[in-house]
Length: 272
Image (cartoon, rainbow, N blue to C red):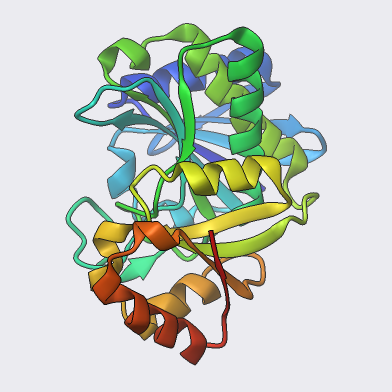
């Protein structure tokens, strides 16, 4: 079963959920912690839950019954730049939990599922000539859960959160994940370096048979030790044998320590 999770407190989430319900055969099920819809999409059992809390604090969602194979959060995205952006990432914290989740704990990253969403969004944005950037984000914020989990996001300001066409694109991407979950086998890698929105990693995933799981940005490398690196590898749904480094996007003083740690946990290294 795949669990889609929306928040009634999040206007973009409500917008995306509306388009999921308009296009997919999901029916109201029961009142519990929020609205619940159930159905089957592409042979896959699906539940959509609308919570009364912000998604980054939905730490108990992994306790849902039956246990989900994958959790997809339908979410807004916020940034100071307010750049129109559709993004995908895994939740979790490399250091202190400042915005939900648990300190020094990342969720399980579904690398191929995130690549499916990324490619679906990029395709529709290009076809419809929408003024939106499509991008991976690094692993950040809560919840930190023991299930494969990913956010698909619409942002980056209230203007975009209510954009019906952009919400439809994100809803389509979420359903492409549902229909194709477990069918794609791109090489899963750990990404390290560069900015919060890594264009190099995004382009690599779109243009090659590579799927990024956890992504550690330049600004978080100082928080990372061998234990966190190993956690990022172990808590990826697929087997990870490679670390892809945005080499110019890593501080000089961090490079040697990082390479030594990656070698120490047995990862191969590719610099781009």
